[in-house]
Amino acid sequence: MTTSVIVPNYNGIDLLRNCIISLLNHDRVPDQIIVVDDGSSDGSADIVRDEFPMVTLIALDRNTGFTGANNAGLNAATGDFLVLLNNDCIVEDGWLTALLGRMEDHNVAAVTSSMRNIGDINVMDSAGGEIDWMGFSRDTGKGEPASKHTAFMEILYPCGGAVMIRRSALPDSSRLFWNRLFAYQEDLDLGFELQRSGWKVVFEPEAVVRHMHSATTIRGSFFQEYSCVRNRLLVLRKHFDAETFRKLRPYFIIWQSFWFLLSIFRGRSTLAESILKGTHDGLKMPVETFDAPISVNEIFIRYATCFDSANPIKKYFYKRVKEIISHRNA
Image 1 (cartoon, rainbow, N blue to C red):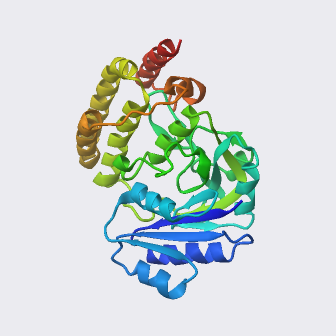
Image 2: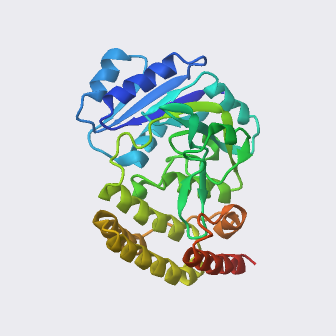
Image 3: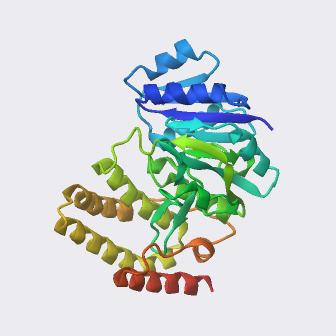
């Protein structure tokens, strides 16, 4: 079982160096380490060439996003198993062995790592991803004690920052992620693709990495907020059948409008602008459909939850959307 680790990088020269060193010093060195430099201007590619000649370098001439960088890495990868690792991660001993161990179950397509806060290894950053009935996603366990997340379990989707993927499970052998997304929600989309194709996605608590969240993006920036808003809607449109989405659309639009007005009221102009443009583009941009034997309705029924059931407004929306999805699945 050979492994190829793909590390996308954009202007993260110091983070990248530490990440590569941790891989080379790991108790089980990967068969192949690939760094995809995504049009950096900080000399990252030169550092890889000069200091790490054993690492495969792909130097792109422009920023193609998280999706494009990982897809470029896939094309250079030779391993049976692909490991996506953010440049702001440091791997702990036993990490790769734990991931490979779960791949002995041939029904498993992806194994997500136990991502811990880089400042405190006892605090979780991510145990994979979860979703609510409105299609909002989040990292499971973020900010919680790691002691609460010690059990192996099946999950909806992996965190794209530290995950092993079975190459043969990819629905499209030419890509890992949907390039239209560029960045954000791409791991949710991948999770839907794998789940709908009949594969399992799991969380492995013994595969530990330390992670600096959003180290190479500006948290709360227009780009981040806009991308999350737009991509959530694009992913939902891609996976729901047209009739189901037609029934859900009014609830999504009303919720987005309420969210927009609340952001204005709270003085969060950047968020308000991103909601407005992201909602417009998420509902208008063309999307590809994904044909698979399992409907996304079944996946929602199995995994969707209520992030804030104490909020009466959210509770109403959750109830109505759940009724539509469940009825369409009957």
